[in-house]
Length: 197
Image (cartoon, rainbow, N blue to C red; front, side, top):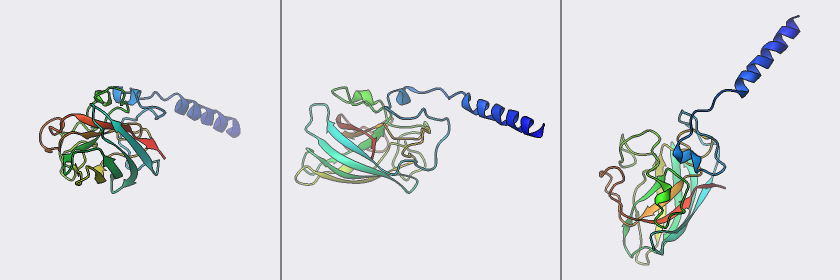
């Protein structure tokens, strides 16, 4: 009798788990290829150990590059190289909400990745987007060595702050860290999707 009751209870628990409704998906998550539906909570750790971004030119620029991402220090660290920039120029770089670089001006990537609905700001300040990062600076040859950090996002797991499958955008101008909603950073000159591996 006890065995039958335990078996029935186990079956009910399993059935309840398998039919738990998913939270609604946002427009941002609907364009993310092969990414789990986001949960309504923020994840504190990544489930994917590394990712990369192949940046392709946008808005008629010649900007391109490759970045690697890894979870680090409560967020994601991005390293790599971006070329085709004006010599000695400063450029904003952000994670954007949609992994869609199909528009010629990369507007298809949507706004900054901001699952907490905070104002735009500088990394390290109390309020900023999860996709906000420090500016990058090109050398005399128009190449920027990227070594920046995004505070708050994770890689994988499908939580609201999961950046996997979203886009990284390089802008024509530097971020002033105060103008809302995007730091007055100008046109989107390169776009690439964050991909595991």
